Length: 540
Image (cartoon, rainbow, N blue to C red; front, side, top):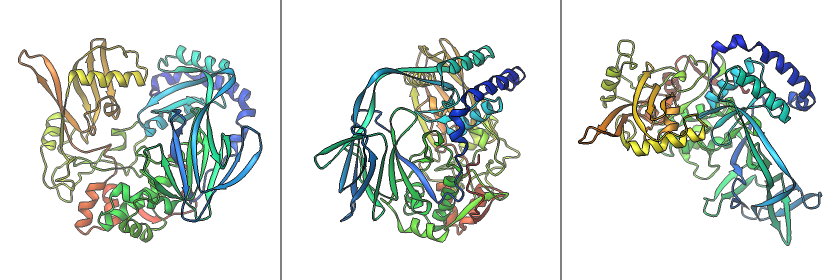
């Protein structure tokens, strides 16, 4: 949900109300006031397994390397004793632990979003109104009224009532009655232990991890904690220094056979991205995830010589704009033109994240032929030669989907976000009503049997399976009776298209461009420079 400016004049009561809330909650939030942000952040905390215990069948196996042992430190829930043990292998299981009394778990949800960037903008808008919030990720990204502040049913319902009276109809309380909770169990020797928190390390600083019965064995550097999260289960967190972390990111993001300059460019922005984004999982007491919601991180399995060379040759280098770390967003394929930040997400534009024709030559004059025009967009999408990504499979694509399947997609999406028109039976038509100058869809109207649903920006991809990006147009398909039966999605690119194109950087590197020149092409006005002590902060 996006805060509407027209409501700001009505919301002076929110500031007064929250002074009351903050006074009531002050004893609760004092400990949080002294949490400090990591300067230099040379060690990162990465959530390797984010919601362990969501299913009772979940399991994690950790194994030491060679002659080494795992060192375990924990408090045993069965005896209350502090323990320190060693073992060669550790298998973590989930058991349901009955609660002595039923427990009511509540969250006041203020916004539900497909991406962290838009969730953060929503959170900042709530903060401007004086409401204490936190960003979480139970599945999609959500903005919650902060639990430490609104810590009683009375406070949550008082805030909900006031918000609904002010016209915020999409806020709601999510309630669950719990009769049991998941607890982590493991055995060492003949003894079995149950824990809520566990530290795991090794002498060599190397541990092999397998998630699930059929998961891949991957080696990781650093050490680990298994810790509770905001959703009633657990996160396995890897604490690792940033240069070791990059060895598990760069080859999987840019490819193990990338040209060196492309790998160097990827390394610099991956380092920058990690240092700038350590705030993402503050609600769960770690910093980054290990998947595409952050950066793909597979530890020390699958490292490559090219990536290691790129990491060593760029050690400590970051990308900056006016001496601050940039929001180093990137995607695999832009489709021939990069996006503005606000083409995809809500929030303030970044001056260095703007539309650039993804070609080393003049193939299109954007100032004279804006892609917000549907005619211009279709002409652009018909072009295939002369771009950095020419020949890549996702540079241009077509996907067809029936009205039946599109309706099912939309129903699932509306259910996830608790939309008031969740009971739709059929999509009757779809129309793109607004594009950005870079050609990205800003608004897509979906006419259904219950009314029109307007999807904005990246929510188009959240709602439907076919689009690989928001860079496409629609062609209706009719049967012989002129009844609409399907839509053809005709587009280009994969992902959001903001910042560097990974495949585009391949081509520029092959043309002899340096990593710095590649980065300045995709992030105009930026500089590559050594990290300074005051730069690695949780900025936004």
